[in-house]
Image (tube, rainbow, N blue to C red; front, top):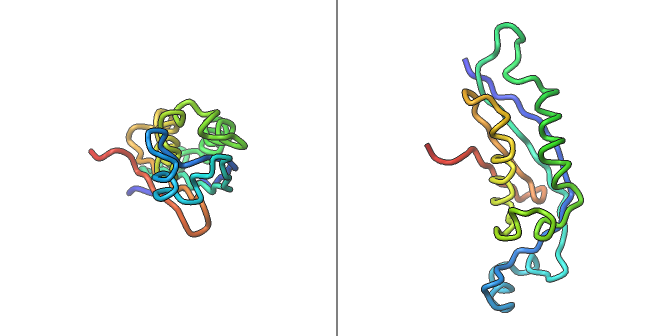
Length: 138
């Protein structure tokens, strides 16, 4: 039997969607308001889920306090109130779309999650726009 457990978190961050190799006009056409040269922010909502077998000794798939602390130290502390394009090394060369941020979060958390468990990241950029990432294809 496999069970999925989830933890919600949030962080606030600014970004700009653009490609430096494109003209301003092309960036404006593709990214619209998200291409604002002065950046713009989001109140990101995050759901991290771990799916696995219940440990017969603890009754946990993963200790939720461990998951909470992991999300705090690896994600919230590093992304909250940051300009993603400027302050996060990975996004100096990767466009900080919701898709790429979700992959970034998954990659930061994966080393800390038991290899026998599945990891899923759901990132809400707005209440109606969200992405889900479950890892690279096998």
